[in-house]
Length: 116
Image 1 (cartoon, rainbow, N blue to C red):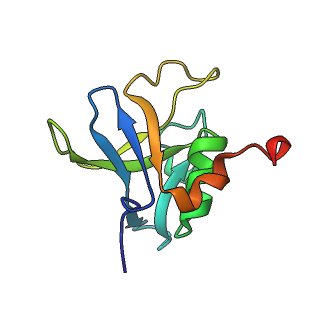
Image 2: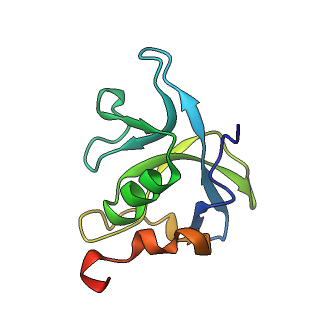
C-alpha cells in the first residue's frame, strides 16, 4: 500500500521543496491515514481527522484550507513530518507553501461547484 500522495498531490514551498502528505497511525486512537487538522487548532491531536482517500485529502487542504502532515521528500532539506497548508485570507502567515501540484486525473476536485 502506498503511504504518500506523491503521485497524486503535494504542496510546493517557496524554495520549490515538495511537501508530500503521508499516511500515519495515531498511537492513541489507532486511526490511520493522512492526518488533517482544521484551521485554528494547530497541532491539537484531539481535532485531527484521518483519511486514506486522496480525494478527501485534496478537498480538505485545497478547498477547505486545512493543515496536513507532510514531509519534504526533495529539496534542500528533507524533514520529519510537519503540519503545513496553503495560505489564504484567514491565515496569510502560511508563507512556507506557495502552491500545490495535483495530477490531471484529480484536478476536477479543485474546481468550485459554481464553475461546473
